[in-house]
Image 1 (cartoon, one colour):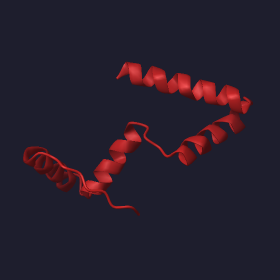
Image 2 (tube, rainbow, N blue to C red):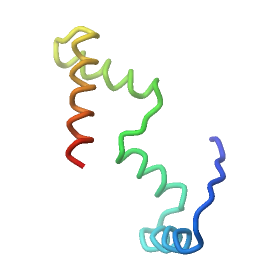
Image 3 (spheres, rainbow, N blue to C red):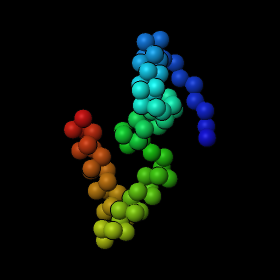
Amino acid sequence: MTRLTITLSESRYRALKEAAVQRDKTIGQLIDESLDFYGIKSNTQALDLVRRARAHSGLDQAQALALAEQEVRAERLAE
Protein backbone atom coordinates (compact mmCIF):
# COMPACT_ATOMS: atom_id res chain seq x y z
CA MET A 1 0.00 0.00 0.00
CA THR A 2 1.26 3.50 -0.80
CA ARG A 3 1.62 6.21 1.83
CA LEU A 4 0.42 9.76 1.29
CA THR A 5 1.10 12.96 3.21
CA ILE A 6 -1.53 15.71 3.11
CA THR A 7 -1.75 19.09 4.77
CA LEU A 8 -4.97 19.95 6.62
CA SER A 9 -5.94 22.79 8.88
CA GLU A 10 -5.80 21.85 12.55
CA SER A 11 -9.59 22.06 12.84
CA ARG A 12 -10.11 19.83 9.77
CA TYR A 13 -7.63 17.28 11.13
CA ARG A 14 -9.37 17.20 14.54
CA ALA A 15 -12.76 16.76 12.86
CA LEU A 16 -11.41 13.93 10.69
CA LYS A 17 -9.79 12.24 13.66
CA GLU A 18 -13.01 12.55 15.70
CA ALA A 19 -15.09 11.12 12.84
CA ALA A 20 -12.70 8.17 12.57
CA VAL A 21 -12.99 7.43 16.29
CA GLN A 22 -16.79 7.72 16.23
CA ARG A 23 -16.97 5.26 13.34
CA ASP A 24 -14.29 2.94 14.77
CA LYS A 25 -12.18 3.39 11.64
CA THR A 26 -8.79 4.78 10.79
CA ILE A 27 -8.37 8.11 9.05
CA GLY A 28 -7.05 6.18 6.06
CA GLN A 29 -10.21 4.06 5.95
CA LEU A 30 -12.41 7.18 6.02
CA ILE A 31 -10.44 8.74 3.18
CA ASP A 32 -10.58 5.51 1.17
CA GLU A 33 -14.37 5.30 1.68
CA SER A 34 -14.72 8.93 0.61
CA LEU A 35 -12.79 8.25 -2.59
CA ASP A 36 -15.08 5.30 -3.31
CA PHE A 37 -18.13 7.49 -2.62
CA TYR A 38 -16.92 10.04 -5.18
CA GLY A 39 -16.20 7.32 -7.73
CA ILE A 40 -12.46 7.91 -7.77
CA LYS A 41 -10.96 4.72 -9.15
CA SER A 42 -7.80 3.67 -10.89
CA ASN A 43 -7.99 3.22 -14.63
CA THR A 44 -7.76 -0.55 -14.10
CA GLN A 45 -10.70 -0.52 -11.66
CA ALA A 46 -12.78 1.62 -14.00
CA LEU A 47 -12.07 -0.63 -16.98
CA ASP A 48 -12.93 -3.70 -14.90
CA LEU A 49 -16.23 -2.10 -13.90
CA VAL A 50 -17.04 -1.38 -17.54
CA ARG A 51 -16.01 -4.92 -18.54
CA ARG A 52 -18.31 -6.47 -15.92
CA ALA A 53 -21.22 -4.19 -16.82
CA ARG A 54 -20.76 -4.95 -20.52
CA ALA A 55 -20.78 -8.69 -19.88
CA HIS A 56 -24.22 -8.35 -18.29
CA SER A 57 -25.68 -5.84 -20.72
CA GLY A 58 -24.91 -7.11 -24.19
CA LEU A 59 -23.25 -3.79 -25.10
CA ASP A 60 -19.95 -3.66 -26.95
CA GLN A 61 -16.96 -1.86 -25.38
CA ALA A 62 -17.64 1.53 -27.00
CA GLN A 63 -21.33 1.45 -26.05
CA ALA A 64 -20.59 0.40 -22.47
CA LEU A 65 -17.96 3.11 -22.04
CA ALA A 66 -20.27 5.78 -23.48
CA LEU A 67 -23.05 4.72 -21.12
CA ALA A 68 -20.69 4.72 -18.12
CA GLU A 69 -19.43 8.21 -18.98
CA GLN A 70 -23.00 9.45 -19.39
CA GLU A 71 -23.97 8.06 -15.99
CA VAL A 72 -20.93 9.56 -14.29
CA ARG A 73 -21.68 13.00 -15.78
CA ALA A 74 -25.31 12.78 -14.69
CA GLU A 75 -24.29 11.78 -11.17
CA ARG A 76 -21.81 14.64 -10.89
CA LEU A 77 -24.41 17.14 -12.06
CA ALA A 78 -26.84 15.86 -9.45
CA GLU A 79 -24.40 16.59 -6.62
